[in-house]
Amino acid sequence: MTFFTLRTLYVCMDYRAVETTDEYVARLETGSDWRAEIEALAADVDAGAAWFTALGAVQDAELAFYDQDDLEYYSIDADEPLEVASCVGNVSWLNGDRFAHTHVVLSDADGETISGHLNEATVWAGEVYMRVFENDLEREHDETTDLDLWL
Ligand code: ZN
Image 1 (tube, rainbow, N blue to C red):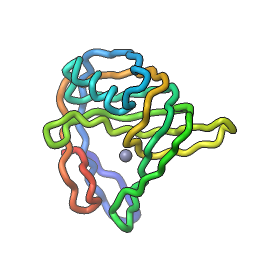
Image 2 (image 1 turned 180 degrees about the vertical axis):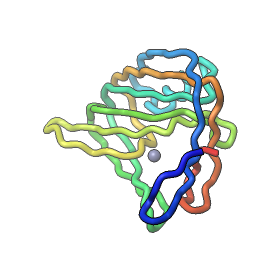
Image 3 (image 1 turned 90 degrees about the horizontal axis):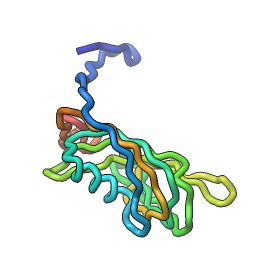
Image 4 (image 1 turned 120 degrees about the horizontal axis):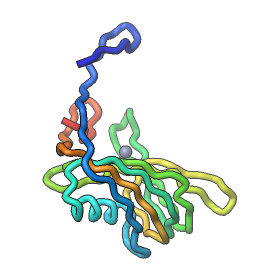
């Protein structure tokens, strides 16, 4: 347990030590779904928790922005080829399935970017580095944010 000051309140931050096991690199399959490929890798190596980074290119993408007032995701669609300038995320259990919580920065031909929470994207090419944790992580619905957060 640790405490940090947030304005004048003391907030208890939930944390735990993680032991890492194996590390993997993988190439994502052209034409497949970006996030599903990462979840398939996690399943293949029997990972119940992992952290990853990735890069590459996609043919289209559906991102989401979480509105903190409405407590709802609004989607951002891109129907053009984009570079995956950066992708970071983690894998944990959500309702009995492996869920790759994935964020991306995507760039177009002018170098302009869109970014956010990644729902879907069709892989053009992709390279992933994944570090697996010894103990599983699990998500559960959080009342305050209406998001599925780590237990
Ligand atoms: Zn997110």
